[in-house]
Image (cartoon, rainbow, N blue to C red; front, side):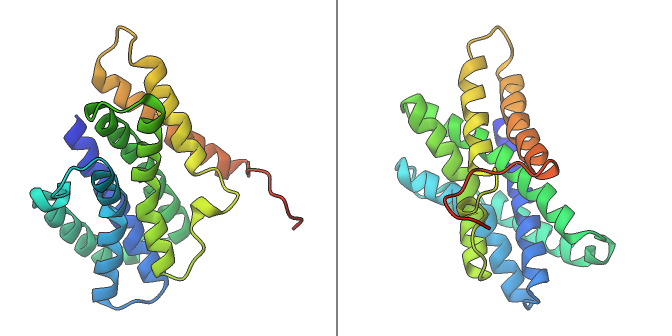
Length: 200
């Protein structure tokens, strides 16, 4: 389940990277680069922070193949994507939900404090998108008032609250990831944002 979630998260982030690159009218090479850094950026930083080197995608070629195939399929099917913003939101949200859980689990495996594990999960989930947005000349979502990193933190907290319950660990993964996804989608739907210190 852990490896499956990691692969699905990679696919979701690769799709979101392709969609942003297409919206910026990049060429094929640019689209591939954005898809790649979006998919592996957060995981790379996570692995470097916990000393897991070479990082995951360098040890397992599955990630590279998955990103390449996902990029090609998304490009070929882009004409069928009618609502670019909605599609981007959905795949980006799925990505952060799955990568939060993967990051938290990696932190636990490294013997880190629960608070650090939650921070690691949030970094895993958010920083691929940060790199993507910076390269695409956008202000990263995490630095705006949207509920983004907050959703990851809630998912991480949920993970630790329910992990000691008598339920299968795979179910814990799914519940915690779902908390991130549902929180993010509800915040967007109902326009719930964090307070800011400036006036619109």
